[in-house]
Image (cartoon, rainbow, N blue to C red; front, side, top):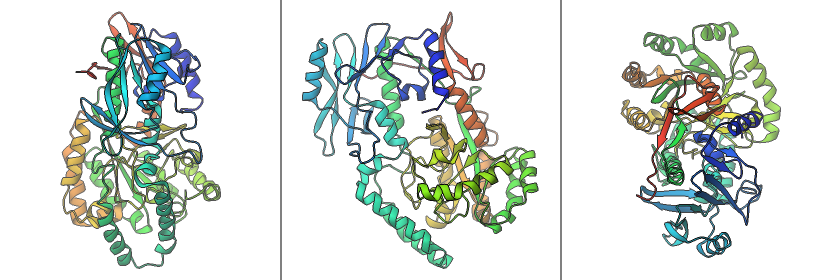
Length: 500
């Protein structure tokens, strides 16, 4: 997933003293930065394994090969009935009868330990446990992660045909939007928001399913190893969470309204990223360079802001040269698609270091859904920084909020969970006093929070790459981080609680 960087990291992890040895590369372990080495063994009877030095093993059904193949069946929705609570997953699941047959070939004394239920609460499979403490997952944990990150789970939640129809409607809307008066556009969005508000999954304003799965997986591994499981913490220098400011400048009027926002942020010692649209209005490159010299960042917000930049491969190929020329002039490494429209397969083709087009959960955008995570992740060699705070236009214009309370509520929940609070606001909305007041109060609340990493998006992306290029080693005093993030990363320990 991380491109050429992967081989180097694998060589480094192979040389370190680890407690886990995997038959294959495991993306969930890479994401959590759990120490393991890759043995490169072929799957046996369709089963991959992660062996601990204790002799216990975590086994799982190797279903990943055609999981994302074109035309493949969408991942089934199932629910892991863990002791910590119900965790929805989206993956192909091996039923109990097939599991019994597979485990019989391996030998041992296995019994179902955790129920995996279907759409109507019926038991369709189980997480099995062997008498010695080994564990079998009837699904591929990497497929669970990929289904969330890529939003492929929406094919199961909404149905593939319904999702395709929604894309057609979305494209039609953006093609006719320029012909509609602004008041008509807002009226349509508000009416549609009533329908979108009925969405049950992913929940809004926070969806915990994927992170609950991360914790369950790490807890099971800790049980298998027989000791607290180390992983690299999400943020550098001991920071507990991250707070990131971004803005989309969609019009010339928005570009003319930068100064009050810049003054507010400078006064609080904060800096932000400004995403500009090079083909829609004239951008003074000198102004861009002055912004970056002052510690701000500039990104690319599509080419024309007409909702069509990433609608197809042909459209990307047509518009990418113009976006790349602007990026080179401005020194921009980040991208956000207009109206956060996105396609998993196309985003890495843009050639940017990072993208911020994926909300964690948002039913109210034209392309509703979300990646269901409040941490960065990789889409091939591109870092995805999820947009985790409601946009100002959505919150104040569409939903009718009149203060910062919704922003504060979400930020506090992200703070508690150690997440990335990444907000997107627009200067042409911040000129309105209620929205400006709410934004100012949000910034004033967290400007002095020393537990937060106040960073630019490009800094978060660079850190996430350094974290991915680092590994954990045993030392005389426990576990230490080596590699690119040594000296700034810290180790977290996960207790084994899966069966308690």
